[in-house]
Length: 141
Image 1 (cartoon, one colour):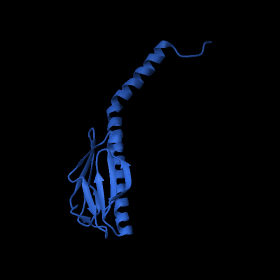
Image 2 (cartoon, rainbow, N blue to C red):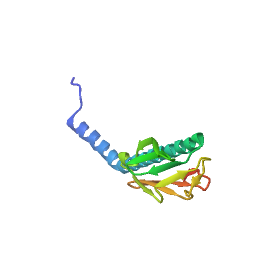
Image 3 (cartoon, one colour):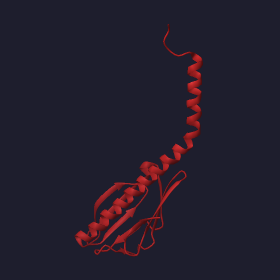
Image 4 (cartoon, rainbow, N blue to C red):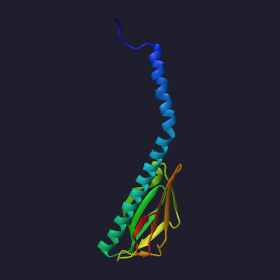
């Protein structure tokens, strides 16, 4: 008695597997894009909160710069000093559109002129929007 599979059995299994992958492929791609966009916006939220708490902790103004390649936080004063620099969302293949790419945080944690600043993260069909409030909070829409 021989062990193994016949050529016909292998062709049928590969055909069924290929059909299932072809049907579920686009859905998997959309989920992947959505997860990557969510990761990029989550990193921006973390960056924003770190900068805001740094302003409160040091009782100084902080400038947050949101760029596609770099997220940068700077203590403002007589001499500006960068204290936090992270790679931007473009490293994940996510595009960033900002209604205002620079947000200033006051020593009390409130945004200076940052109300209703919108950050939009996009990749493919997936998008995530972050908006700042007048009180300096960053929220997902």
